[in-house]
Each structure stands twice: as C-alpha cells, then as structure tokens.
Length: 303
Image (cartoon, rainbow, N blue to C red; front, side, top):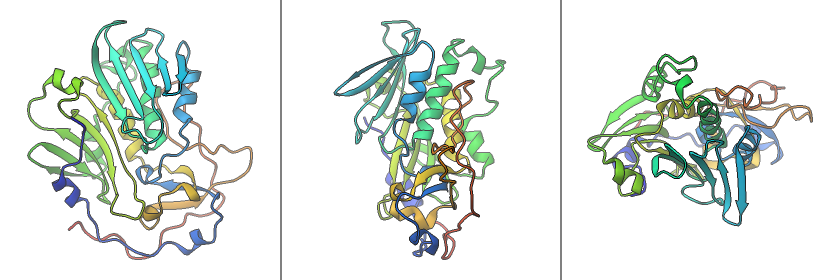
C-alpha cells in the first residue's frame, strides 16, 4: 500500500498565503544561482548528486541500463536503485542481513525529493556500513544522540496526532514527519501491503507549481539514517538552486533567498551535510549580496 498523506493532515497544512513575490527576484535572469531555504521548498536540485557520491564511495559498484542505475555495497547487502524521473520511488534502498537474503528494511524517495536529503541518507549509509552500523548505534563514536522526532520537537515543529499517525509539522505548515500509530505488520510493510512506518514529506501542491514529495522508511530502517535525512530536511542552511528551477508557487514562502557567487571556482552544489568522512557534500557559493526576504505579509495561522 503506497504511503499517502491523510486528508486531515493535509487540511492542517493550509495557510493564509502572501501573494507578492520579492521584486528583486523578478529582475534576475532565469539561470541566476540563488541560495534558498528551507530545503523542502527548493525543488529537486542536481539529480546526479547522489549518483556521484555513490560512484566515489570505495568498493561500491554501479550497473546502468535503460531502467536507471543500481549501486551495490561492497558487502552486497545493500542496493540503491535509481529509477527514471517521475517515479514514486525514484530512489529505492533495500537492505538484507546477508548476500542473497530477503529484505529486512527498505527506504524510498519520490522523484521530486530534494537531492540533498537523498544524499544525506545514502552517504551516511555508506559510512555506517564500514562497521556494520556499530559506529552509529548506542555507545558508538558517531551515534547521533537524537531521533528525528526529538530533533524536530526541539526546532519547534508542532505535533498533531491523528487516528492512524502522528505528524510533526514545520512552522510554515507545509512539511512534516509522520510516524504510524498502532501495530506494524513487518512482513506486510515490506511487501507494500501496509504503508511504511516513517515518512518525511512536503505537501505544498495547493501553491502554484508547489512541491509535493515524500520519503518513506520501513520500521527496521536504522534510525540514525532517518535522523541524517531529517537533519538536512529541517536545517535552516540554504541550498543552491537556479531561479528557473524553483517551484513558482513557493517563492513568496521562502524563508530566505540570496544571490550565490556565480564565480567559476565556487560550487553550485547545495549545502547539505552528511556525517560521512570523505563524502561531505560541498559547501555552497559564498553569498555576494545580502539576503532577500520575500515581501508581503507573513504567513498567517493555520486554519
């Protein structure tokens, strides 16, 4: 059963919206590089970023065909599959206990998920596999020390409880983290007969060209991997996008927009950080101008 946002939660996300975009944005060329936040509003970004990081990971192999690409871990217990754009599972990660065994957990990211969130999950996974996850578990040197729910709660995300799930909603109301309530049938979940236990999502489809994407994780997914994705998902750090690639409807709702240095020596890759040594995502261009703050009234309360 595919994951879907409950209608009650959708209603809770609706805001009174401003209608005026910052005038400076209207004066910029379509290919102007911008630093924008929050990341969940930023669109997909560079779809090849996660590919390049996996290609650079020691011991990982890649097989490419017309259906996409499949990356295999050195231990052959984790497979990362990238499908063509438009897929509900553009990125699919499957893990087994031993080569050839049945799956024990699975994660997926829809095609419009910001690439920094995908890369945070996969690069942390690459590092975790070096010690069979031990470094990230209790007592390990890289244990996160938090959970996605705690992280978002400390950032002030609002908790709403529904019959079938608990949602933590971003302050603007358009993004969230959901946890299924009640008993989870492990086998049915892996078979797709039940929705996965956890999900990160953005549900801004009511805005003109607003993004709607989700990332889902079955119940046995190592929690530190979900935490890594949630850290990037909720971080205030801006990411790099071209103006033409930003969903039009979110421009008035961006918390921050500023020009990135267009110089050739600066990276146009977004500032999403994984915890993986040697596989850190590059820093963004250093801003050459002050931040733009979208004009118009601030978003009103949820209705």
